[in-house]
Image 1 (cartoon, helix red, strand yellow):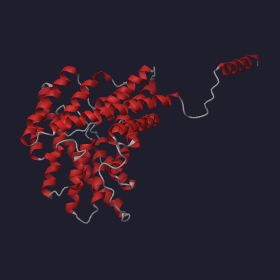
Image 2: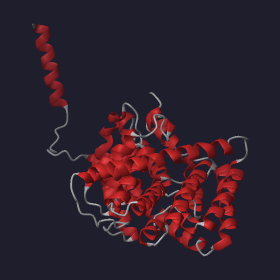
Image 3: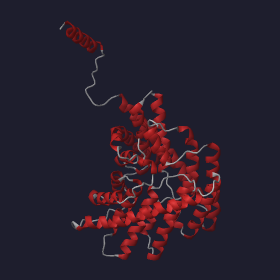
Length: 422
């Protein structure tokens, strides 16, 4: 009995010896760190976007046959940057580092990623700036975590929050960006990363504010597809049918990418030769189909407002898939989410022209959701992102389409590191 009393006395003394804390709220000092990361991430994204817009306007001056030498030159320069400064890797490396490297993203190759991706995206490659921003802001989160001596899950959560801040800045969707930074890490134990949802959400909100202030971003959707009226329960069935078509073209994109990857890897050649060849091929496609040039941020609106024939839409669909595949496999840097949305929009327009009685907006949004969820395996964030970007306020049809694309995805994912076991 004496021993138990002594133990209780030691326990009470230890409790009294601890400093008294008067904060009755969930709010803590870590919130300030998440907010600071969001502010830094938004600033980085804003500066990157301004530089991208400036370079894009300079290179857009070249048109017609001139796009071929311009894109070839930019491809060569991007390859030389990667060869001499360092290979920043792709989304596969980010997923691997978050899962197997204790959440550490190395910032040493950020200069190579920024410079090469600016050239690739601005010259007209079919990849967007989301992947470079995610890598740069995610590695910034790692750097800040080390600066404040964070370890373990706290460091991993800060890296994920940095990724979310970069993704959110581009898409203007804090909740969608937060979920995407978690869903992209998908594997059978993916739920463990959801402890990072609050840090990601806080960083995303602050990143969005700074980015919106820098580039004067509004709250209106980028692609206005709000003209939709619910016509009954059959709309969910239509969404699933459209999504099946979108998933089929998601498979087509994956197989096309594997085909070009096998061609580029058949013989070991320097990275700058691969990017040069990729630039020439992309320039030729852009010469014959100018709307396939660039990653689709503005081109989707051009597609929606234009009066394209069915034959031309089919050609745009096929050559856009080929252009994205070449861009991905030839060493060009960037992300493929917005380009996949472009493919989905084209497919929706084709479907409507084949069957004019169907709702055009529902067809477009369903195809966009399905093809992205099929390739990236991110159904929840895809739903929220599309609702934000298109102004399509009916979540459930988009969710039906996203889940259809997700469950019809290939068993071996496009981002192969998503399925590696720990």
